Each structure stands twice: as structure tokens, then as C-alpha cells.
Length: 271
Image (cartoon, rainbow, N blue to C red; front, side, top):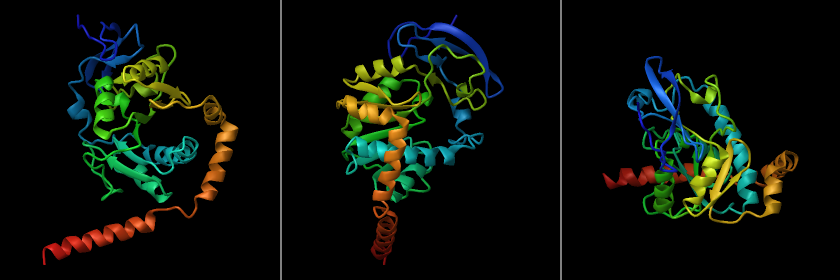
């Protein structure tokens, strides 16, 4: 029988069920009785699963990035981070970074497993300091989320991260779409309690804004701000007002000129 230790609670996990991934590998799933983490056995199939970093079955990727952009703008404003410097770690093709720069926010992207297509010249810089990190659709891909969070906070000199991952209350049936058996890329699944313990182990607190959107930070978010963030009517009304106020904040043309001047400088170096 396979034994697995929870990477967050460091106790023995309980066998949960077995299921086929990538239509070929029979994989065992485990549950941590303390923090609620569900995780696969050691994911030996990931190289195959990531032959293309963005799964071909993921037809909703652009829709989600646009939806996240609409959500992030009022969130950033309500948290007083409008002038902040953000690092999108696990940024994929750079889609979200480009969308956020187009509405005036200082975003950079990083993803060691995927080519940056849409935010070239706006990659995360080593030793740079960031006000907040973003890890959207990242933590479900991690075998050691505790190490990921500690390393990220250390590398980017911040203790604020915005996460998106679908959380569960009761152990989901095998029919739960988020298990993503077909792609084999999702290997960790969380309760809000799991994320809360993960935050505490990093000297932070968890603020869940919904079942899928979360903020982990060492800063205190006021009760009133949380009420405003969680009230859908206020939040989306504020989003419309914010969008109208920021119509002239775009970095699109500024970035165009920066890239153009950078390319000219590169050419001159070799003349």
C-alpha cells in the first residue's frame, strides 16, 4: 500500500479513491484528515501531461482571463494597490499581464513552463520587489504548495498573493470536473481550511472572496472592505465606476513605444 505524507500538515494522508488520468494511468488520490488537502500519488506522468503547457482541452482560457481582469480592477482599487507593482507567476502566455497593462496596472509575467507571447519585455525581473503576486490556476498544479508559497514570498519580497482555485466543502465525487482526469495536470485540491492553514504557516491570513478567489496576505483587510468585496451588487457597481474613471490610464501605447525604443537600441548595439 502506498503511503503519502501531506506536504502542508506533514501527517499521513488517507487513501481516498483511484482513477485513470490521461486515459492510461491508474492513479491513487489521498485526503489529509487535518487540513483537507486532496492530492494524487507522486505525479510521475506530469512530463507527458505538460507536453503542451496549456492543455488543448482548455477552451475557456481567454474567457477566464477577461473575467479575471474585470474582477481584479475593482479588487486592486479597494485594497489600495492601484500604484502597486504586480508579478503574475504562472502567467502562461502573458495574457493577463497584457490585459492588466492595457487598463493601466504595472504587471509583469513569469512562467517557466510556457512561452510568453503577449507580454514580451514585461517579464518578472530577478531581485525586483513586488507589492503583490498573482497565481491564478497555479496551486492545483503543485505537489508542494507550502514550499511554493514560502519560496515565492522570499523571491519577490512580498507577503501578498491573489489566488484562484476552486475549493470544495465535502469530498467531491469523481464526477467533479475540477479533477481534470483527462489532462492529468491537476494534482492538488483544497478546502478553504487548507488555504487558511497554508496562510498561517507563512505568517499570513486567508481572505476568501468566493469559492474560487482568495487573498493570502500579512496585511489586515478591514471588515468593511471585506463586506464591500463580498457584496456582489456593490462590487460590480464599483467595478463599473472604476472602469469609467480609469479609461485614460492604459499603458498600451506607452508599452508600444518602450518596446519600439528597446528594439532600436538593440539594433544600434550591433551596428
